[in-house]
Amino acid sequence: MLLRLLFVLLIALNIAVGAWLLLGQDEVHRQFVTDPGVPKLRLLSELPPSSATVARAASVTPPAAPSSSPVPASPLSASAASTPASTNALSYACMALGPFATQEDLRIARNALSAQVQRARARQEQTTQSRGWWVHLPPSPSHGAALAQARALAAHNIQDYFVVGSGDDQNTVSLGLFKDPANARKRRDQIQAAGFPVQMSERTETVPEYWLDLIPIDSGHFDWRSKIRDPAIGSHSTGCF
Image 1 (cartoon, helix red, strand yellow):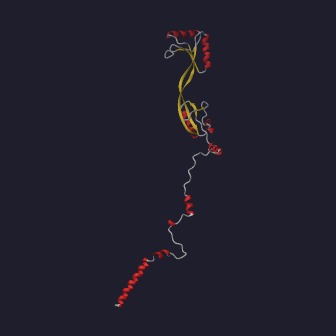
Image 2: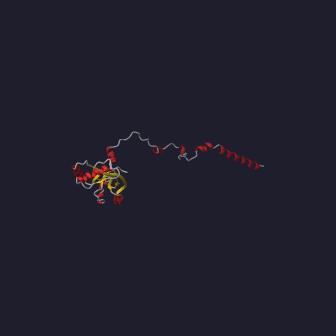
Image 3: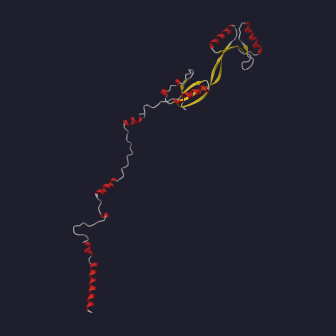
């Protein structure tokens, strides 16, 4: 019995000591978590912000918005902007060559100048050309009256005439068609001296003429005369196309 009692007392004593260690030492454990002189551990969230953190936060602060007031440009920058990018830029101007008598002449000229032009086009125009000067008597009211005028000319020893029998100039006595106006005036004066009411008029016709419009690659060094030697061909400036 004594041994059993001692065993029970020992168990009860162990339970009491264990309860005291578990429940009665909280403040002691909280007070001596670390050794004396060793600083306590803290969470990062519990630490006050350091100077490095403040500096880093300042470095990522967005820059201030730029001022809306315009900054005046300096005279030097303005003059530099107005200066051409290249002083050796090629110059060009639109021009027309012609007139060419035929389309074939124009085609040959276009092929000869193709390496020196940026763009070229052919065009046709209608022009009035002189066919010569006509010396004649005024038209008669009838064919018989025109024949009477012709016999009167022959009586004055005037030759080289004929009576127009049809067309717009019907019943007119023609006295010659001349290329040179000086020769036409001489013939007119001869007939006029014989006492006839002679007239002198220019004969014209509408004919096509051909032009070549082009834009040279460099007008300052464009020598089209070296390729087209026809003295009848000229040039003048024209609108660009």
